[in-house]
Length: 218
Image (cartoon, rainbow, N blue to C red):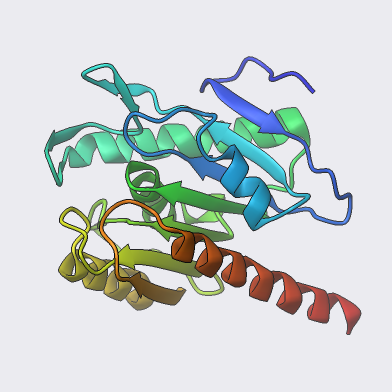
């Protein structure tokens, strides 16, 4: 299927397993593209549809999902604007490609993980769950959303100089206080992803899939 003209440049790969209604929303890191996480998405949830937009904000020519003022210092107003724009894209793409809007799971790395966090905090109905790889706190909302029933995987690096352990702890508390089921896992690594990260994410997806199948069989 060729991609339709929507509000974000993107790649869309239809589901190859008709029994899987979940769509992975793949969100790249700074300097990435809509192609970066397709292989990871296929590995994490084989057979699922993949929706992978390219961030619209450019920083020295590198695509991002929102502006930052310095390393680790976000333009909060732009986080808000871009989170809303991305949420509208998900609605638009769901209608264009016939996706189940109630079953969108974000997989985001670094800047992509942060905009996924923005979606959870500002437009929580956009996502059913999220796997956040090396995330930071994107913003502190005026009012905590109700994230009960949403599962969030947070994969951090103990030696990460950007998304530090302190920052990870703040994010875990934020989502937990909002009622999400948070699964934080720390790897002995820095900001780059490792094979251990991928295996941990695979196990998380497999566990969620097994639980969903058990509910279906009841």
